[in-house]
Amino acid sequence: MNPTTALSDFLRTRRAALRPADVDLPDYGGRRRVAGLRREELAHLAGVSVDYYTRLEQGRVGNPSEAVLDAVARALRLAPDESGHLHRLARPSGRVRRRPTARQQPRPSLLRLLDRLDGTPAVVMGHRMDILAWNRAAAAVFGDYGALPPEHRNIARITFLDPASRDLFADWSTCARENVAFLHLEAGRRPDDPRLAELIGQLCLGSPEFNAFWAEHPVADKTSGRKRFHHPVAGLLDLTYDTLRPADDPDQALVTYTADPGTPSDDALRLLLNWSASR
View 1 (cartoon, one colour):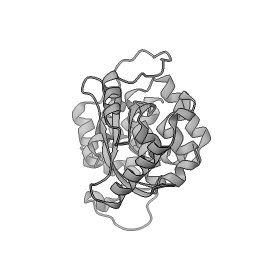
View 2 (tube, rainbow, N blue to C red):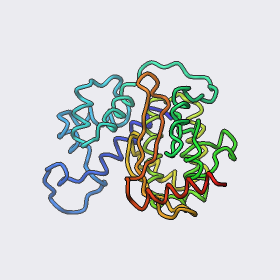
View 3 (spheres, rainbow, N blue to C red):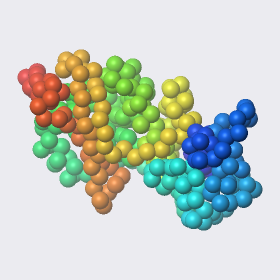
View 4 (cartoon, helix red, strand yellow):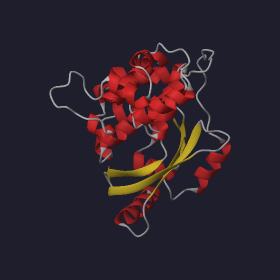
């Protein structure tokens, strides 16, 4: 997880994703030799010289200013998470290489919340997407995490390396890409995290799809959204997920899954949880 290489990959993929019409530049037709914008076009939009932008994209600018990075982010039409990622990659703070650390332990207050969310599927997720704890409702929807070795209880690992996940997620590709986007975000925050690097390496070796998504360099936090599941017992479940992080401990989060009241998914989830409890 070299920040210089990551910076180059990130800028190239974002530049390749833009067309002149996307940024109000004239397109004179003809075949373009590069995908997306040329470096000189991006430099013009950001208000910097072509030489400077070229060196920035190659990771050869030692300490670019905040103003320049903001200008490049605007030129590339970056979302807030992507803009923050650019700043972290281009202006890495001095770091001491971390030694391997023990597996994260769930925060006691989050465990107490899990106990009180008996009718709501919920998990405690670590910053590497490890599943640190879960409740009965989560096991009913997603399967028994307790049957897995602790080192395999990881959302990204399960998504890419467990074939059953492709049947469970109604839109597996979208969910998988969201996981890659979060791992890219965390890799930018923690380029010297050996356990995170090990996880990414295992996924690269074990999944061609992970390799393809990783090369696109998506970047996004895991906040909230909707996911649809094809459950073998409950059928189709359309659930909203929310990620709740303690303000003083953002390295782990409580992720909850709820159905809109009065919908077929709400009824199906209730029946599933009752069926699971009766077993």
